[in-house]
Image (cartoon, rainbow, N blue to C red; front, side, top):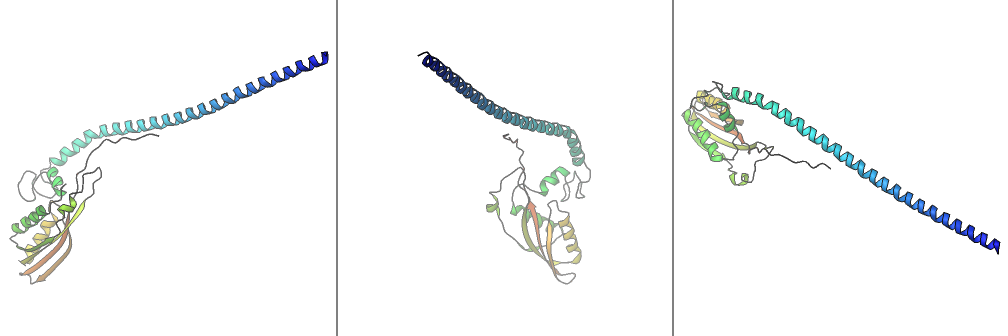
Amino acid sequence: MANKIRFSAKRVAINKANAQIVTIVAVASVLTIFSLVAAKTLWAEQGFQSRLISAKEKARDQLNSNSKAVDSLMAAYKDFESQTTNIIGGSSSGTGSQDGDNATIVLDALPSQYDFPALTSSIQKIADSLNLKISDFSGTDEEVAQQGTQASDSPQAVAMPFSFTIQGANYGSVKSLIKMLEQSIRPIQIQNLTIKGTEQQMEVTIQAQTYYQPGKIMSIKTETIK
């Protein structure tokens, strides 16, 4: 009987020890898993904070650089705009076809809106100044198609092809016409020049293109850091 009691006591002790071991292992497992999850979360948070700080520092440096450039940019603009002779050889204060201050010339060089009739008027004005008559002016007015072109932060120049014919011109007037087209406030690129007739009676056909550029917008962008 005594042996049975001793055996039962040992059995209880063993079961109790096993239960304690299971409890300790379970607690240790929970703590280990929690530690691993916490470590992973902290590591991800550290990486995020590092990327966030880096992006903020980059934005700060760019802002400081831009601020320092403002004064030099303003000085350069004032010097550019105040030139007595403009960039196309005219007077900055005159009213002739080549006159005007540099700031106005730059804005007129690449209009922000598509305007084919204005181009026609410009070419006609140049021809009239040389007493030349345009007998044919052709091109495709794409105003409707270009209406969908919107201002953007990186606008691109859009070509406007056209052609015109002048009859009864002499050599000197043709030479002057080409020079005036080259010196036009609006950039005009002559692609093809056809001349027929004699030195005093020429028929000249010019195929060329000019450009317009949609407006540029300045916007503050946001960046998502992940």
